[in-house]
Length: 342
Ligand code: ATP
Ligand code: MG
Image 1: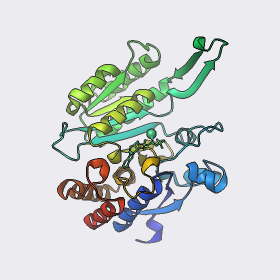
Image 2: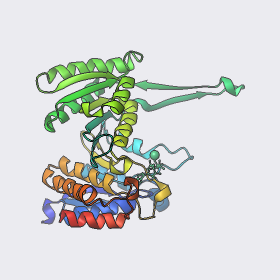
Image 3: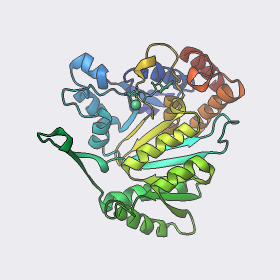
Image 4: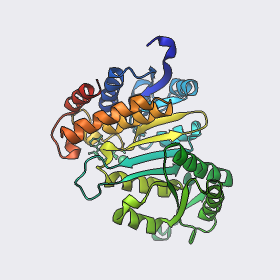
């Protein structure tokens, strides 16, 4: 492939197990000649170690230029008033939609037919971090507050994103998940806008509504009845971890953060410092993030090849890392995946 046809993309190896699993993913992407020209950048603790900055200017500039990122998990330094780097990145680049697909890979467990996509609003709600702690002399009387907000514009944008996603990916149904019975304003606005958007897709995509507590129960009892879920920030964070747990856990779950001008692909899990450097982390969550990135640049053909290779290695050949009940190393599963995509 000539250099000109390569798509510039920012690569952030990340912290903890990040460099191992991102390295594994790049090996597999190279094996299928994925069309990316990587600009390697630092963030998180790696950024602090190199330049004292968890989000160096050169990393921000690179993302502004490429608008496309593959990212390993980042650790936000504790104390010293650092804000979550992941949250900062989402805000800086307006990555309003967090998309987390989860699908049964290994059958024979409790849930064999799960294929759910959680679309989470990424910028508003209770994660806007408008928090306050009111200390008093008698500490038992101290009060902490958190103000959340939603805007009509953002509610419309995120629900529309979910319906468009459903249309483009041959999905049948979108479920609006909310708590408008109690949070009448905050969630009421989301539900009201959601219903309006749903009308625009009538006849094409079905729409259901669920209160988040009922949804949580149904996701555990009959998850196969769910298709696309769209919800606000806090609920989406929780429900998408729940859905990834239904189908094999964090080692398999990818996520995409999509904005108007940039898109960032990552594993749902964190930097897992407990197993960092031990050659036992599962690289598949990041690898699947790379397949979402390939689909994003309209290379579904390459994404499919990787999905097939994952199926061959993990399901047919039962080559599995420790988190999936196996005993192969990161290097061994990477070698098997490379062979399977070839
Ligand atoms: P962070 O503070 O960066 O969120 P964490 O300690 O919360 O890190 P997570 O990555 O969120 O760790 O995951 C929790 C646990 O799940 C880890 O301790 C690890 O044992 C396991 N885990 C996470 N990702 C993987 C993976 N890719 N392969 C194997 N095990 C994993
Ligand atoms: Mg964590």
